[in-house]
Image (cartoon, rainbow, N blue to C red; front, side):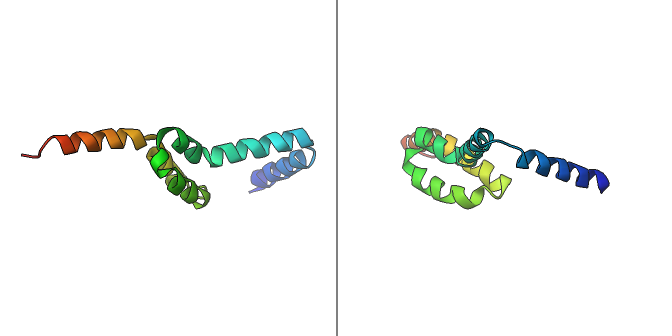
Length: 92
């Protein structure tokens, strides 16, 4: 327990001594990673980009939901291709 407290104290000390440039870069990186599924949806899954962006806000609190959004964002065009193939071939 003491090592955890030491880590927390050293982290807080480093955070308080951080300059403005570091804090801005950290904040920018944080938001890019948080909204990465939304950014990827703009490239790969434009049809559902709005839904993914809306769900991205609370999904950032859960790694499982965030990863699920990443998969949904990336597989958008692939899903459309598979759906069109499935419609073309009748199920026998």
